[in-house]
Length: 329
Image (tube, rainbow, N blue to C red; front, side):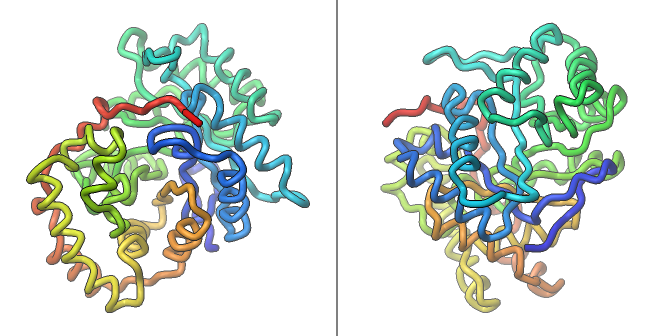
């Protein structure tokens, strides 16, 4: 798989990463053996960036990645682990905590669960409004100085917050929701990141699965994570399913699946973009990884915009209200 450089600090990643949250929460029970096999398949396909967080499954996700890498036959050269802190789950309670006095402890706990000596990319998962952002980033910068972390990132920030963070320490990447379904970041955050030389890592690049072309009404009702999102409710869902249908013939005309078309569109937005689709199935991971080889020309991109323009999708993303349920087996 082709590689891309994110930020100005030399961080190089596969063009597509793997979002690992679903192995531990959000989309129903998952089998660890199957999850490890899926991670191995991603590595076999050339995916190097595994994206996780201390909050996913209350630590289970980081431990699962450690097991996957430890049980893989032979070395896994070039694998980069991106993890996050700032969202804390205590049983059913979810809170934000990015106090600078506790940043190091959270990092050490993640290092222990991951079984590594250094974290390749360490994100502030969400800004904690109870403490100054500059203080949190300053504490993260100390982790880089001490050799516990190589690169820093931030997630779900405003353009102003991104500039503030970059003024304290070099920020390599910003994680944001960005897809054909949700393009609001193109107005402010994307240009702000580019002006600062910060790489873009879109999460939910398949619109929480909607753009995969395999989501239907039954699968939406089966998962509270999607069902709580306004884009998956009532008339909004009907409108958005129609938009996906409008993309199907375009995908077929260039030899791609709807999921591959959606990812290829994101990759075509710039060589500073590395989407991190998530899946628990090895075959789906192979499907999305193949999007890195797609080559959409300007005509294809125009046709996509005409078939599914930003204003045609319905509903607010409602991301902060969506329940990220704890792992169950």
